[in-house]
Length: 440
Image 1: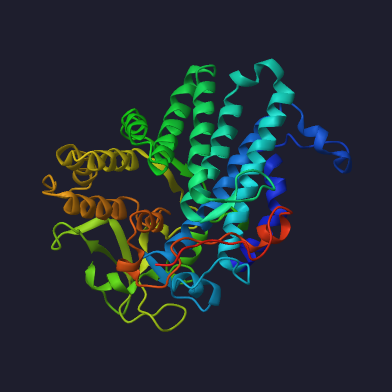
Image 2: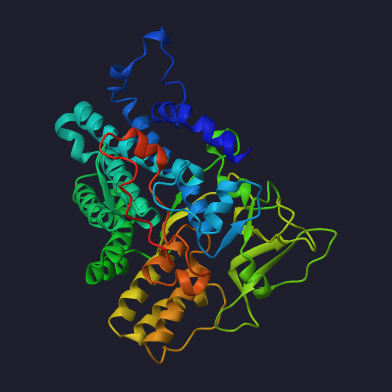
């Protein structure tokens, strides 16, 4: 399925997903034409409304990963789509004249946020005084907050509320912290089995939000409270077009070869490739260039070009399957959050210890404590790239550490701009008001 057709069906399917995700027979009514909004106010159906809100976030997430990775140094456009190339070459500016491929992902995240807020209102209506004790309210409050987190780390501005005015990305992180804290307060009232699952999700999400908001002590406390082995994923499926991932559809030779490893890293790939078939390789470990880093796996057939027939093509191995789940947040990231806070405190020994938790888990040699602040930042960002490879965070790392120019060159957009469709549809926005994205 192409990028265009997936986006075309998503708008039609998003409303349906709010009521049918995970359903099996519950919507078998005598008169389907009479099934309306009020029919969703049912204790039986309300779980599907909540799951649909989270499902809409999953649908948006893989597209956010693609456009942020295209803008950063992980992948580049090997397609024939001019809007992908605009992102890949850093050409985007505020109030971009077309919707491009960046508008759809932001629109989808905003819809997910609204779906979560609408679901929360419905849960309170249906469950009344028992709403706070339901894990469903915790679930949709998390979706609400995580949507803010995605917007703030990917787009330079957006509306903090439905139909709100433009606000800078930095305002989304405190708002996400507030929402995650509210959800954590709800956790104490829900069943014990749900408490275990949702407490880790919310602590990990708040740790990232606190880090990006500059609340470093709070970020450290949250990150250290997340158990090792924790993982929260976005879920995809092969069976229906709107459930397939764009990453699996476009970043691997099994599908469209539309985005591949950026050329600046081709010389760093370790592996033996032939012209007769695809072979797996990896980027070399940044610390020991003789060792492969399995966290950054690629796949290659000798002499093969991307769809554009211009650039050598290295596919992203982790996205070979359109149905494969994708990491939203994990304990691996929490080790990185803790490491960054230790770095900012000048505690390079504890920083190295946290980084080495991820390194030794994949068989790489531990690194020593960095000797100075510059070496510590290099170690942190190299490890963040490896651990979070093509998971939607690298570009914001380059932006927040002011490394876009030194890494990718000058006169490039340092974040994605506001969606053009949001500008045109939102009565509190007008064209020509953009003050971002800044240029490298």
